[in-house]
Length: 233
Image (cartoon, rainbow, N blue to C red; front, top):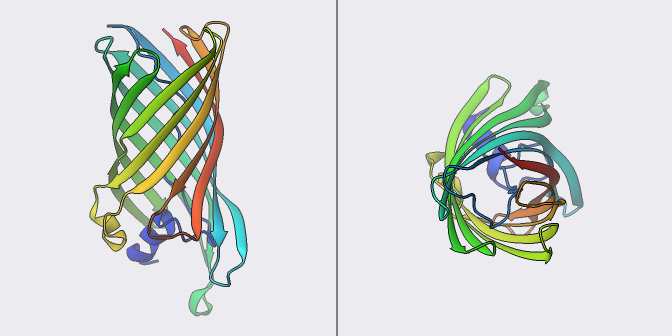
């Protein structure tokens, strides 16, 4: 499989008629900040799907990958938090019957990000600025690529210390030459999640939905859903 085809299969979100590995598009967090020198851990599982019209104009909704992730956040100050995050992207098998020769590729990926969360308004608004690294493979082909995904986080506390809702729009900015065929056009995304706990400042369960579009294609998109758990150390 040529790398140009591989890159399209992985990242151009209009290509929803084939199995692919969708970019990471989950947050599992809110706008609250850790105080200085405090820390927390996060675990999550999420499922990604591609939806849209195929080349025959038929509607398709297919699973692409299921992710398992871990993250660690440290309070540099009560206005700036730093985080490192890893996710394993377990994709489906892609089958290629081109030219009468059958080949099978298992799509998998590794995702690593380092980020800074900056407070705008205490417990209500923040900005997350991650730099993200992907190592992707399908069969004997592999590629690395990078993105930056600034995200605005707004949180509304429904029940004090027990229930909140977070809405977080984002853009995904390509940093790698692997995206030249997309002309470096940023993807656009949105996360909507809940925080459930007896004390949100100590731990929380976070169900979440997300969606990610390629602005160059209106016929297809990725969406994701999952659960995260965070606990202050």
